[in-house]
Image 1 (cartoon, chains in turn brown, purple):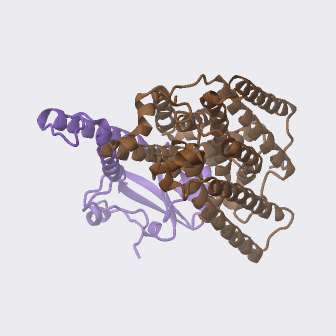
Image 2 (cartoon, rainbow over the protein chains, first blue to last red):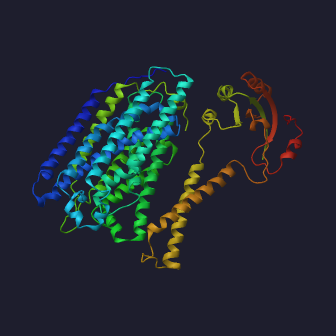
Length: 417
Length: 196
């Protein structure tokens, strides 16, 4: 079997990603003109609409691409071998993290230091003095801590991701002896461990508290970060699967076959249910206790204007995968998997939408929120999709598609589900 | 159940077994089963076995569990014994989901275990008759079913040629063996392989 090691970017693909990015940029500009550029204190809520759209999209796609690196590290730590045949694809997706990270950092800093307090109302120092709840949280929820932690998060992810990627590439030209192979696996295990610790401190705890939960600063949920993690991890697996299927369609990745697709399908299925489990946990505890300061979060989502989106995303993220992915033949079918991956990526995007939007769009006088006209949000999302497409294939084309000297490659070739 | 005649070939290497399975199927003989000491990936595909329908049964059991939990708890808390718990409505679905989930898991797990035992003919006090006892230790044992037209010596010869280290002819009753392990070996008066 001949193996096509070098990926060549098709012209049409390049064109498509450029067009998508142009749509995204255009949407941002339009939304800026209609909402973001409005000046004056009375238009603070209008401006928040613009920034919330940017916040939701950038954070979502950042966490989704970062999930690819977590996928590598988790499988490495468990000494799994099956993913090695398409490992370069996950590495390439994680190469988007620095790029989207910078965008996210700019957006977050603009929101925190921009002078408006609608999205993060804990940034309003004077208001916090009269607010006992926010005052109590101010040791954690303040601008300095936010900035420092965001920097730690983004630099840590980017640097460790770079480190792990370059370790994988460093052995491309040298055939490893048994001792070198052991050392390679050991080094990888150690660095994956370091990454997972950082991941635990960021995605699984502090980072969603800062970036997303502090939008509803009075409210809190201890499940929130796990919920965010589950949401982005399952979307991350969907993204990996899409790229694998795309490359298969273009006659690359000869060593990856239906067995690997099946394993990815199992993960997609399992983590969709894991997400539902966390979603329901968070909901049921709040529903049972019925304490007003907690139930307020679900008031606008479950009984308010976000009811439709709320149930739609539940259908897409839970019912669709559990019913459509249950059988073995569905997990081994490229068409079904592709359709579900697109659906799940969209479903979790909707999930993030209803996590972010109700807070910033609340009218300060009536305390009522509303669902905005979503066309611009879709446009921005397409822009980020284009960006991910653009950056990922550039990273793919730079290095061989097969990590051919990885000690576990054979395990991946003979993988059987 | 009918008593059938089998030609039994023993292989001591996986590398020999796979081409052997392929050749036997190509020659048109009917493989009754292949017994191996450990699960071998890809052997089911090589033998041309269809997928098990155990998971379909599991799905049905699961659905049965969900509906049982849902209908029972609905009946209890709305009709039979309505209780005011924390001011919640009598029909409050979120509180029932954990129970529905648990019963789904319970029904599908227990049901699938029992179905598996039934399909594999495993039950307490049921003794299985082996073609070759070393199939549980270090040999891969392939049993080929003979029909009226099968030339037994030809099959034996064929099996030896494709790498079987030991070929015997045996008579076995297919289907359930309910505690007739000892009797059976003598019942038909035909030689079987020596148990050592």
